[in-house]
Length: 257
Image (cartoon, rainbow, N blue to C red; front, top):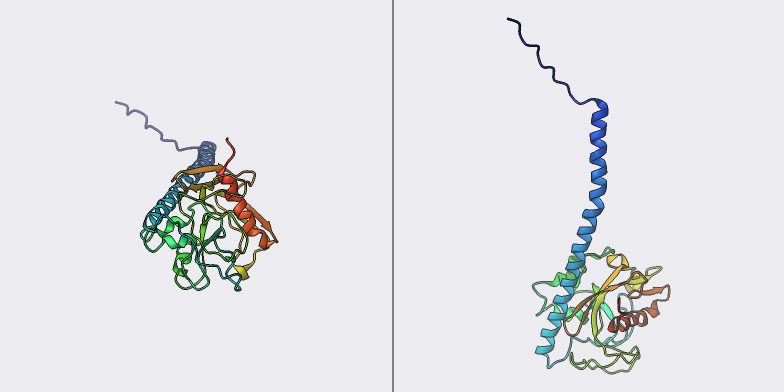
């Protein structure tokens, strides 16, 4: 009786292997941008959550302080390096002064954001701003946040006054519109940077969007592709406060999409 012929096992040819590898490469090329976009979108959502936590903390602060919002400390004018907070109530992303004293949004850290201090930092930042390093500075030296805080201010003059606004009586901005926006993504374009004043090019979300938190707890995503919500200073450092305040005034009354 004859034995059946042995079944010959044939492996992949070189051409077949190259075809499979090519297909895998194409699939990876298609998936990587999608996954990157999904991660970026998730960070955008997290940014909105961070701002919502900040405005909630500010509301709690106001309830505990006779309706007043976090404000100050007094600026004391331009005192030297590492301090660009020169006007009481000026828009700023500082959370601690040169001496480490908590200020602006940093005033919420001790009692209202103690368990979640990282909400002061955007998860989709384009800048080399290290959240833990900045938080460690509070109490000893100058520190920055990823978000600008408004102080409820509508002035850039040296008035010599020190008055904290009420959350329910923020007044009107320079355009005659109600002051509404209190926190916003810090997009600050300065060239060249000025390390002496700790002023650096700092943006979030590649400037395509900007998130703003309003006095009533609402958080909005704003279209920033034209730079409407970016403070473009260039080499004119002292234009910074004016440009940052304009950003908030635009956010008070954003254009309808």
